[in-house]
Length: 92
Image (cartoon, rainbow, N blue to C red):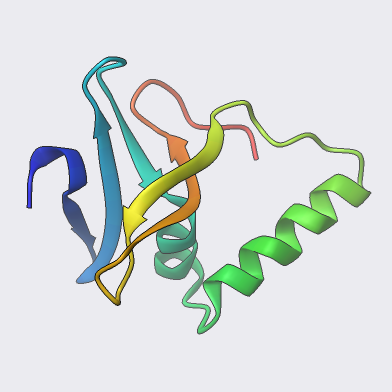
């Protein structure tokens, strides 16, 4: 595992991260952060419901969010929502 695809631990739970050398920023998996913070057994469904609610309420998701390839639990690289927390907290 390299710096670019490291897994960080928060309260003994994994959080996937991705380092972007060009932008010199860390990107975190939103699904993993939601799982750690909420304890939800289905963090992907939780995140999708939250995104839908925000859109229905007229809120816009931050421009800091995007789809990134990160290693899934099955070992394959899959697209997942990611956010940059290195310079500021995203407005979600």
